[in-house]
Structures are given as C-alpha cells and as structure tokens.
Length: 366
Image (cartoon, rainbow, N blue to C red):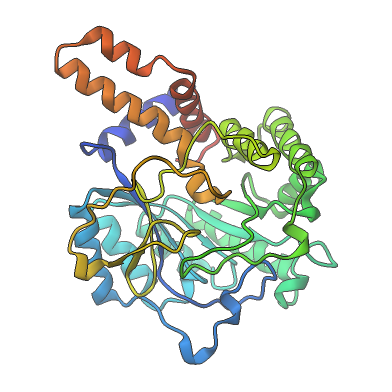
C-alpha cells in the first residue's frame, strides 16, 4: 500500500492547480471501423466522416492548458483511425496534460502503434471486449476471429510496456461475473474496467444505443455489482478500476435512490468533440461553444448532476469529493483556521473519495 500512496502524492503534486484540475474527454474522430450494437458511431455515413486535425488540436491544447485542464482521455469513434492521433498525443503530453487512457477496439493496435502510444506517455490503453453476441464476443462487430484481434492488440501493448485493460460493458451477457473474469483472464488481461449501460445521449457523442441487452433491472445490477466486489477480493491478480463507492452508487440509481456522489460534468469534467465543440458531458445536450472561439474554459455549472449512469464521468464523483475537501482544508489552513480545516475533511463522503483513489492506484491504474 505504501507505493500506491507515494505515487498518488507525486501525481497529485504534479497535477495540482488552484481550484482543482479540470478533466477532458476528447473525441478526436466521429466514426469507427467496428460494428457494435450498443453504439451508433458505425452508423455515421462516410460522407460525414471527420476528425480533429493536428493544427487545430495544437491550438486547442494551448486553450485547455491555460484553462486548468491537467488530465484528458482520447476517444472516438475509434481514436486510432485519426491519422494525426499519435502527434496529437505527443502534443498533449508535451504541454503537461496527462493522457489518462485511450480506448480502442484493437483492430489498429500493432507493435508500431503500441510504441507510439508509449512514447506519447499514454498512461493506459483500454481494449474493448464485446460480450454481446451469439458466440459470446465479436458477433455483433462483424470482425472475423475477433478474439485473436484482442489478444494481438494486448500482446503488442505488453511488448511496448503500455499498461492496458479489458473494457467490458455491463449487460445481460455479463450476469455471470465470475465467468467474465475468467474470460478476461483467458484473453491475458490483468486489469478490467466495467462501463455502465447508457441508454441515450443528447450531445454529439453517440456511443450509446438503447437495446434490450443493456436494459437492466435493479436485481440484475445488484447481482453484477456483488459479483464485481467479490472478484475484487477473491481475484486480486486482476485489477478492477471501478471503486466500491461508484458501484454502490450504480445500485442506488437502479433502485431509484439518491446517489452519494454527484457528477462534476460542467464543473470540472467536460466533453470535447472532433469539431472542438465543448459540451457539459456525453449525455446532456448543453453545448458551450467552439473551444477555439471561446478562448478559455471558464464555465461552471451550479451544483452537481445526478441524471445518468455514464461511468467515465460518474466515477470521478468520489475522487472529487475527496479532492475538493482537501482543497478547502488547505485553504483554511493557509488562512489560519486549523480546526475548520480538520472539519472540512471529516465526512464519510471525503473518506470514501480517498478510499476510491487508493483503490484505483492499488489496482494498477496509475
């Protein structure tokens, strides 16, 4: 546990900016080379294919850095289809913004791509494992021997020394969580991230479709969450990104109960698309404008949101609960109020946030 804590402190010092760092989810391309029934990016007609080019990306990166962004994920569509993807990643890292992860379907991951991702200091690459389909995986993607595609991608990333994980969408095909972990182990992955069903989205991000396989009941979600928690304890050799705080809030949502941790979308978390249009999040239609025309991101939504189950955004809730309390505590200490500073961090939500950070670091997602 000592090393995860030390690493957490080092990363926190590097990333700290007054008022808490902002996090960006940047979709640099609007199409994909795979077919997934839970996603709509493959439905974009070829005449509408577009992506963020390197020149525009460089100008956007300057705005993002000056606006306090210190973390970003690069997504799509299939991000590796963007011909400038590696140069964009290089530019982001050189500007001092950490690329926390890149998700991919694995089709374009070879040794060269893996080395370029490593050299661009991409922290983690997620390889999407499709569990929906007659053969248990790949049937909906219309890719022959898709299992071999995933293994080749994982092996290339391993050879290059790039940390990677299996990305699994919770669905009716994943009700047997022990079987899912065995499947992930068979593919050779030692880390897994479970994404949560998202039935619809109002922004330009179209990675979700409401299909029967992801319309889950509360009892189904509870069953899978308990299975994931048990696997976190019983199969420690496979690191799980999803924290217990996040999983518990997922159950609360399906039960119709208020969640403990709100979403920071539009406050510290934002979505940027291939046109450089900035949105509050993946789910809501609120668009702030084009980043290059805005010149600076200084918007901040009032309060925290509790409308959806978008895992990428929601999982930051516990982290920010802890980080914001620490930020308040530091400011109170600087102002000469030690008792108030102690009270600022003395809450279940704060300790839950700190525990979540340690869970993520302990699972190897650094």
